[in-house]
Image (cartoon, rainbow, N blue to C red; front, side, top):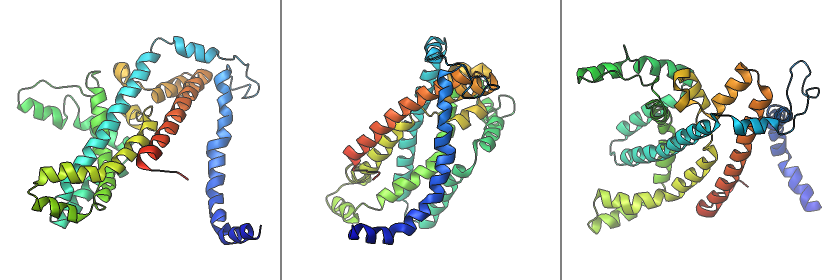
Length: 301
């Protein structure tokens, strides 16, 4: 007991510092969870959360019978999976290339430039992309016209829209990911490269047998942690860029929930969809942390 008291006396300022953040989490994250009840109700705003009639699993049965729900889940998984894959490959490649630069000012300047889009909101970037990809006046289609190609409606064509989402998301976020992998590269012992060079290994062999294995723990960690985001295809980005003509390939779970709940006032049904997504995401996050602990020795506590 005496040891516990001394520990508490030494650590109570740290616990006190956590209190404001804990209060914010309780107010904005835990108290709103009472709204989960709407998934089992025919929610009527005038009757409130505790006065609306209980319908059991009716909203979930309606969800399973909804004609487009399969396409919506496919769009979510397809876009999110491509983002995760490209979000690993591009930053790793850029980090390795930057690490090969000998002039530090070039390296730092390029790193700063590619990091800037990370701080821009999708509201701003969507306006830029709409102008750049416009089929009539966009610079991309003007360049295609120079080579005699027909204009492409990138944001209005179901065949192009998912890939535009992936490319634009990678362009926005790969600078941040590059910093993570550059930090991993600093932990590789330089003597390994010197020994490999003395053995006749070129740049490619050094990258293949020293750089990539040295980065593998952080690569495995980032990959496993991203498994929990496989149902998050990017609401902000897609909501600001999609339109009804590309719902077939662009509509994801989050935009569907927004449209059903906010625009069509089907609060119970929208809550059921969101709850189902949250349950699946919770399972995936739990699995991802287990894999991160097993393969990358990453622990939360």
